Structures are given as structure tokens and as C-alpha cells.
Length: 272
Image (cartoon, rainbow, N blue to C red):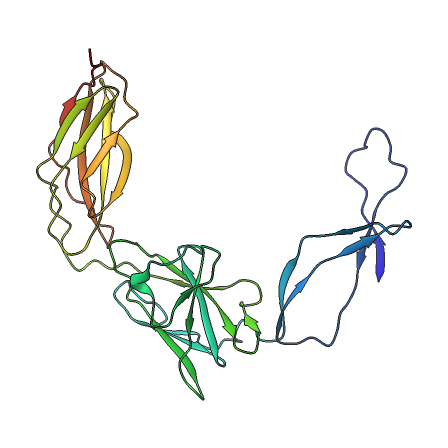
């Protein structure tokens, strides 16, 4: 164990400390190509112990692949099947949109939840080379802009790209026209609430609906998104005897937004 003096603070402290802590460090050798859990334990002269939180690090060369291709196609769209290449047998530990759990529609066969609410694990296939296919990521129930992953190998090692993880940006392409404006828009008033409803769009690639609102002479502003196939929204953030104006739009999986629906208005009233 080695130590060094910490640099002095930029401004004086009051009162002046009797002691200043040192920075301690150590080098551990003999570990390679392993995912290591570690913590620091302090023991005082009376035998009292205190432990730091457990930390994690990949130890090894080439954790980032050394330029080796990890997936193809290199620049996938939401409609592509992506092949991911591992170095040995194990699992693809992956999530989407900055480590959120993917919906089950996207799970390859054999996938299971990792248990942290952020990732799933899918088995790599092969005996001399190991791959897995994921995608396409065009389900309207979960819009995907990036796939996040690391490798969890059967021998207990991990490849997390030297602590950076791997990230596959998903390019959203537009091949269809934007959705049509939602039809059948209605508003029903209540006490301190308004119920909005509309007909579901019939296009196969609808992702969500966006609701816009204004009151008085103000400008319309975005209020809320609801995922397709939801076609009802209760606005409980209104005040009785104030008139509110609304319109809605439809958005497809390529993020194309429709023209607005008709604009309607209503005034919530206290029930007497």
C-alpha cells in the first residue's frame, strides 16, 4: 500500500484541521480478462472496520475489441436485423435507450431478465464462433434509438468495452408518408377534469399520440404523449370555469408527426 499527500484545498477551512487525509493506492497483479468486484476496508487502532461500497471493473487487454467488428450492419435502421459477434460462449447482456429493459417482443429465444430492471440476457449461438441476432426494433410499443450491450461469458468474464459499454445507434428511416390526422376527437367535461378521446389510426406503424393544449389567449403547448393503441386521456390538471383548447396528432415509428386533428374546447365545471 502506497500513499501520497492530497493537494491543498483552494480556500482555507475554518477551523483549520488537525489532520489532512492522504490518498492511498495499490497495484494488484495476476488478474486478466476478468470482471472484478472490489472494495476498500479501513481498520482503526481499536479494530473497528468500515467498508466502502462495492465497485466493479473489467481487467484485461482488448476489452473494447481492438477494432474488431462487434455487430453488422454497422449503421442499422429500425427495420434491420442486427448480428452481434461475441468472443466465446455466453450471453449478450443488453438493454435499449440508455439501459432500459427491452419489451418482450424484442427478445430472441432463450432471453431472460437480468433482474435489475435495466437489462436482459440472450444466449450467444455457436460452438466455434458465437453470434446472436437482435431486431428489428420497429415495434410501436417501444421506440428504440440505441441498443446498449456488454458480453457476459460462460467462464464468468465480462467484456464491457473497457468500462464504456457498447452502443449501437439506430437510424430512423422514413419510407412511408406521415400518419393521417386522428379522427373522431371528442371532449367530455367533468369537475376539475376533462376526458379526451379519439379514434385509433389504422396505419400499422403508429407509435403514439401527442396532445396539445392552451387556455385563454395563450399559445398551444405540448401536454402529454400516450402510446398507441391508447385512445383516451384524462386531463386532471385543469381548473373549473377556465376554458381549455386541445388538438392531437399521431406519430409513427419513424417519428413522423401527422397534421393536427380538429381543435376542440371545453370548460370543466363544479358539479352542483
